[in-house]
Image 1: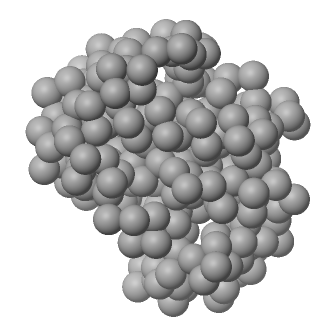
Image 2 (image 1 turned 180 degrees about the vertical axis):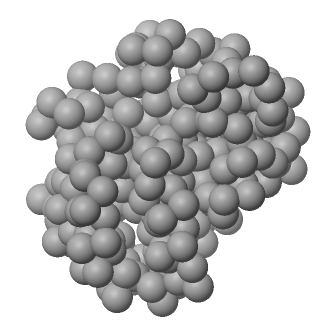
Amino acid sequence: MTKSNRKPFVLANWKINLDPEEINPYLDQVLPAVADEEAVTVGIAAQDLYLGQLVARTKGSQLKIAAENTHWMDRGAFTGETSPRALAKVGVTYVLIGHFERRSFFNETDETVNLKVKAALRNGLLPIVDLDEDLSAYHGQVPEDVVLKQLAAALDGVVGTDLARVTIAYEPTWAIGSGEAASPEQAEEAAALIRQSVQNLYGPDIAANVRILYGGSVTPENGTDFLSQADIDGILVGKAALTPASFLALVAAAKAATAS
């Protein structure tokens, strides 16, 4: 499968921004533009508090809703956590797993990321596995010999048939929220190494189908440059996605990339 057969994916990551009264006005602007969108997968990742409201407002549309995190147990005494079973029953489609901020601020590890990936798949959720590994450590190595540590750990025990349900996102830590994005060439080099690593683990056919997103200071001004790269299939958008017009501009850029 070539890039032209991998549907672009534009995902807003609101983090814990936006107040409750801002949600409906945001959707009032975004939903009419993407409700029937078929060429691009468009999604919003939001804090748990808003997920039920978002699912209800977007029902019947093409706009997908993602959780920003999940626990690895379906039920139990885990105060303050969110069950993957509950997320699925609420109607959430995707879930972000292993984001740099989760690793950095909340002590998430390769092991817990792996548990969460398997929990998401077990409950019918589509995991978006976030990698922030320093890929410079692999410079000079033969790509066919490289298997990224975070990738291998996240996918440990995940069978090849489930990889069609997994999206991988690469976010260099120095670019997140800094206003300084990686260059398109740097992002493409990373995405190509990730795809090669998937191939080394699962074979070329599976690797050719996996969608890889870039995240880190993506804006309407640089989004097209990332989306035009051969191994980048979409973008994970933080600050720029908090403004409906900016988010829609990036959706438009992804749609234009499919036609070029």
